Picture 1 (tube, helix red, strand yellow):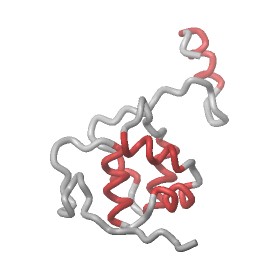
Picture 2 (tube, rainbow, N blue to C red):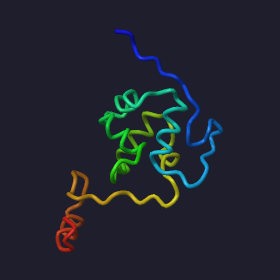
Picture 3 (tube, one colour):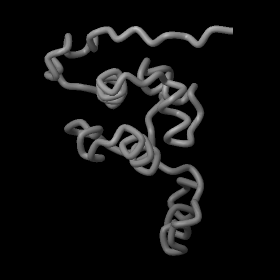
Picture 4 (spheres, rainbow, N blue to C red):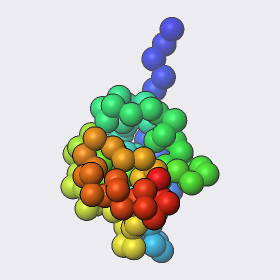
Length: 117
């Protein structure tokens, strides 16, 4: 089976100029840098160790898909760009629904009292 050839097209968000018109969304920025590097979604997902469907969801703004800062960090590292390059003005990270391994016990207790958990 022949390997699928990646056809490089100018970024639809900037037209190849590197400047995005209007306020960019995270998905716009991910797509912009990914296409600039000539990467497929699958290549980016492999390099960032995340599901390719998540990359597609971020880029296409499917549902309420919004990456956490830790996921954005993995994507930025895979794209070899600074994390700040993927964070648009006014970005608010999604709320955590459950405490993770790096959530402090104080945050966990506060979330439980406030009913966020």
